[in-house]
View 1 (tube, protein in one colour):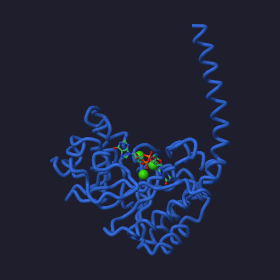
View 2: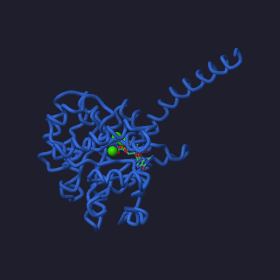
View 3: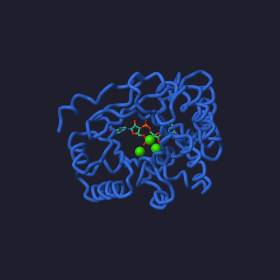
Amino acid sequence: AKQSGRGNVREYDRSFDSSIQNRIRLEREIQLGLERNEFFLEYQPIMSTLDRRLVGYEALLRWQHPERGRVPPDQFIGIAEDCGLIAQLGAWVVRKACRDAAGWENGLNVSVNVSPIQFTTSDLPNVIKAALDDAGLEAKRLSIEITENTFLQGKQNIEVLKALRTLGVGIVMDDFGTGYSSLSYLRDFQFDKVKIDRSFIWDMLNQPHSAAIVDAILSLGHGLGVDIVAEGIETAEQLAYLEERSCSLVQGYFIGRPSQTIAERPRTEVLESS
Ligand code: C2E
Ligand code: CA
Ligand code: CA
Ligand code: CA
């Protein structure tokens, strides 16, 4: 017991140390990464369940670090938010996604994740307007995905949302069900889409509580006249469950993985399953 206790302390010290150092180093490396073009986007398809056709793609940020290799977004977005680099990084994502989408022959839509910090520290409507103009992309082909926690930053964010709405871009509430008091936001602002977080989709077929929450979000969406997107679909059974309950839009590895080149159609397994 003594030995394992000491082991734990040493382990803790080491990870604490390296996480502080790591953070400071990562801050500098994010800045460098922007200068050296180490960031890129992957696109994950979003499918309509009505006709099983793709309607658009979610842009997901990737970082190919020269020594660390692929760094997942969960490991650097929080740091970029804390040190103020998220405004620059986020503006790059919007510009790049708009330019890419403008070149897609299929004319499908693109959606981009926006950090709550971008709402307060950057002039988001102007950043987005400039990106649309620069790319020559119609505003209706762009959506932004925001989490419920965006509203913790203050009520003036509703004003930013209204300015974005005026531009004509779609507004999606992301990770629905995982944040705080989201129902009042649904009352105060007309979202175009609401995305059910994948943590509910994962276990809905084994966990009655998750299924009940998915069912409730779907009937809420139908009642409000808001399209519901389910993310994280990995199996034909999950897709069938959602289709039976008229979930209009779906996304997940079963439909298509994020990739640098856009998929033209869902995976053949999807088209064969029913
Ligand atoms: P998110 O917005 O909830 O994005 C969905 C995440 O689920 C992505 O992880 C995607 O690769 C993953 N995913 C999609 N389908 C499946 C599936 O069937 N199974 C499983 N297990 N996972 C699936 P990723 O790319 O690692 O991104 C993680 C988070 O990082 C995103 O969560 C988003 O919050 C954030 N993020 C990504 N790109 C950006 C960005 O450009 N800006 C900002 N602010 N955040 C971003
Ligand atoms: Ca998202
Ligand atoms: Ca999510
Ligand atoms: Ca998210």
